[in-house]
Image (cartoon, rainbow, N blue to C red; front, side):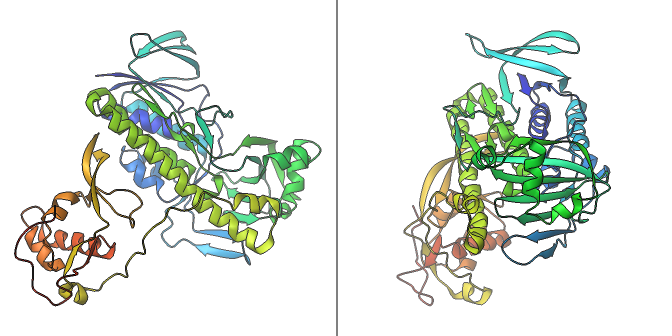
Length: 479
């Protein structure tokens, strides 16, 4: 059993702590603020609840009765639209309550919580960490084998923090007795974009996302006057005219960045400390929880199977790097749609992005009738490579399929190991015949589903020797 210290009890820190406790480690979680405390990120994307189910806290969150997101008002690159969400899987939450529920769940799993407490961590010469905490219990000194930093955005960019988007400032304020729309709304303005979030307690949060240089050099006056000047570009301004503001206008850094030193043999960063997304993604909480779950598997591997430590670190760095690139491309497309319609420096600057990776054209999906007749062979562009991947509660190195049509090498599909199936595939077989040949490894129906996926993704292609009607090859498997 290893001793783990986690600094920061936001969604990423509490999720990581809970998962490490479930994996049998002793965990201490240190949070500097008293809970419940207000926090940005009140709109949860649909993928959050399924992730929380994996640590056993979904029922607790659903029991809180947070409102479902039924529709979103969008005024982006065209006329105003009301987009309905038929499945209503997103939630509007009070982040103070949401974060408190996650922290309570971690504590119920045996996590020791020091709160409020300020922590200072120092590496030991012989390995591990010494953490000194000034807490309500008085000074506390901890010795930990592993340290997780989940303390959010640091606000500074050093050698290890790589900015992956334009520098952005978020201005925001909370309102009551207002006339804002009942649903969340997102809107593009001339020099900023806006997000309005109705909260469970009847208040609304209005946010303006503006270029940092423009905010500091072109807007004058107090923080409040600059915020209201930006908000005048949005229909949200109408809701403020007779509203009562709760508290002051606030500003925070909203720049996207990636921590290139996100993992070492004895430490890891999770959540926004590791990867902060452009806020246009509206999935920051989801990505933070995803990183925490992956980080727990990586940390468990580093502590219990150090022989796979290099693979575990590579997995985490690559996973975050690919996510950063993917979200940057996605954000650039959304900013570009407004830039194409109205122009403006704010939009044009954010429409730039790293060039997308080259990819082969994905073949048209085949129907059942054509699959029954089509005779296939392994694509000449397919390679089998060793790839770090999640295997249960550890990172292991497994043979994986690499192909231009895939974003990254794939080792498993539906829990089934793909490399042995590909190696066993006889050239000239149909999907049905492949499933029959694989039946000693995988149930026939699932083997057929795997074969269909391989064909539709272009990893299996029409046989050059047999075409769609020739005989099946009599021997030899794919090496």
